[in-house]
Length: 304
Image 1 (spheres, one colour):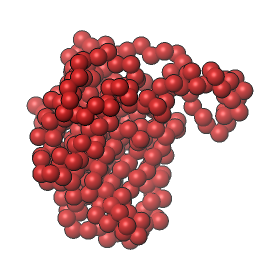
Image 2 (cartoon, one colour; image 1 turned 135 degrees about the horizontal axis):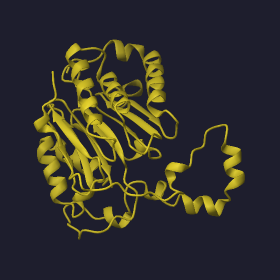
Image 3 (tube, helix red, strand yellow; image 1 turned 120 degrees about the vertical axis):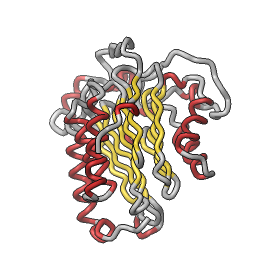
């Protein structure tokens, strides 16, 4: 199944990527072989200064998102770093599984981008991410709104929507995405039945093309489950160029009714690689371990 080029949307090409400060978060890694050297070189005060855009401001400034989505706010110049990333949101109509896979040159991207609720939908919120899109979007989907209706509502209620990128798939397999005109190049998305792929600050549109092609091919072949389709699509996107700034973190979230530990919740798969030289490869390793530990759940998926 090919990709409908008419569904590919991108921001204007004249928008240029930002120049990042040399001491940005993307330059700080803590692999086991250099942690001591880093601690010796950077004192506590300097470290805090250099990572002031860290956990307290990973996605957006508090003043930008503290207000309810139904309260519009004036357009403001962003004061935080964008969650420059590529992601894919998907649904498996055979099992009812819903999920998100994401990779970025950004610390702990899994704490910001992916949201999902079994029987309801899955959401990826990125660029200068409005994290309220996650819970608010799932709430609207749970009330019967479609993916498209939910995207439209979230975007129309956000005065800074030009900075946002959003992808949603509902429990009926409907998909919808949005790429604001203020997202840094290359930025765009693809909407297809059962999935949508989106990214910003990418090497080019070939990244979302590759993710879409991979997902469609594996879904058609019925090879593996949704977790495999999402993880492999992520790898295809990286192989096509990925984030133009490089790699740092990745995450895979899949929800399934009573698919969590001992059937006590719906959190089937929640894997995160927060800081790694090859995060997608590490994510695949963790998925292999998950399959070994939870053999029965993977071998006997539910019927949607």
